[in-house]
Amino acid sequence: MIVTGGGTGIGRATARAFADRGDRVLVVGRTGHTLRETAEDHANFRILCLDITDTGAPERIVETALREFGRIDVLVNNAAIAAPQMLSAIDPGRIDEQIAVNLRAPVLLTRHAIDALADTGGTVVNLSTAGSLGRRAWPGMSIYGASKVAMDFLTRTWAVELAPLGIRVVAVAPGVIATGMGERMGSTPEEYARFLEEMKPRIPAGRVGNPDEIAWWIVQLAQPQAAYTTGTVLAVDGGASIA
Image (cartoon, rainbow, N blue to C red; front, side, top):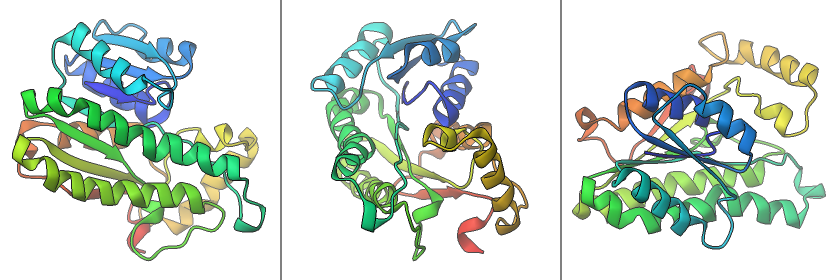
């Protein structure tokens, strides 16, 4: 298994969920201490600290997984960044950064993993967002949302392209999840806590989600019992995208 962005949030929960099942997981991220925290007390982890946008990163990730495990059954394209900005104040550099992490890097990593995934009849799980599903708008998050819409399209297209190789491609689109991402985007802890509280009345389930709930679905979609599922983008959002 490969999980990118595995040092925090959904990536950490997903890596641990696979490891708890006995799967061997290569957890990839940019920050060494958070990766070590993810892998703490789990013998089934290997960590790889790198920036997935670096030249040669896809090759290094795949080569490390094959060297450590001898195979790749699942690739979870989870790593992503967001830089909230309205169009009138948008920074070209932040556009490039988000597209590089959220879109270009998973494209190149998945391309490089094709042969290994074909050998195992493997599964690619892309992380999208329920915030950009359907006809919804998302003021201030246009570039992040656009990158996730692109991942939805890639999920459907790759599912068809890679089906002859026995590779499935699916996506999970989380809603509002308490991952701490708001703080990593620049909010104070108080601002982020207030945002989560303000979102609760907008969600039919009446609460925000937690990373373990998203990780559970990622693990389920990667199981052999899900073999007839490909090309789908599954919203896990407490009903927010249909309310």
